[in-house]
Length: 241
Image 1 (cartoon, rainbow, N blue to C red):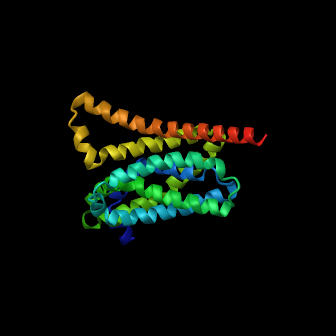
Image 2 (image 1 turned 45 degrees about the vertical axis):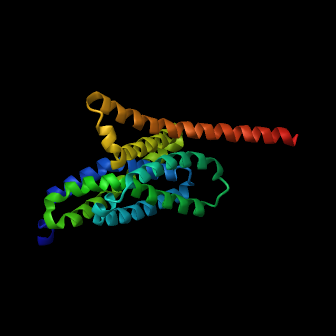
Image 3 (image 1 turned 120 degrees about the vertical axis):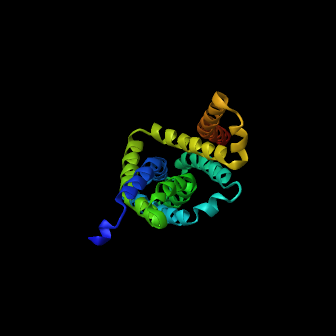
């Protein structure tokens, strides 16, 4: 009991709250990566992917200061998220002949890498929420992440069920990855200073327009891919007659 009472539960609750708020994007990524999986392996993929992502996020917490100091890290992470939004939609078409176990492994890897990229900003927010715990701040931050796992897993499961019934949500989720990716790119020190030089309304709308551009860039790229693929299939079918 002394062990439990020695915890700063206020700090834990604050960290869990921040992590859940920031975990919405991560739940969407997990749901997108698992939406095309058969139901019998979907739950396993969500659990393994989330467990791997949380372990990597704990490591990221310990080295957050160093990682965020690496030049262009947000630029690379943002570009990856834009690519991932496109890839998750375009890969969906050709996965039906791939064994379920292989698809599950691919989904788990996608979840872990995407969560790492998206957590670069999230980890700093969680670390800030844990500062009140003093020298135990990293331990509290990791504990908060662990406690938030059930909520993220539940959210991902609920979203995958919705995506099965309403495929339009998959498109929205992929576009959201483009939005978050563009947001990370703009927040990289290489671009942030230039955008921040635009004061007031101009700066606000520049940020908004760039993030919207990321959203529609993913949707547009997928539509172009589908159009080119259908045109190529039509040409091949005509040539074979």
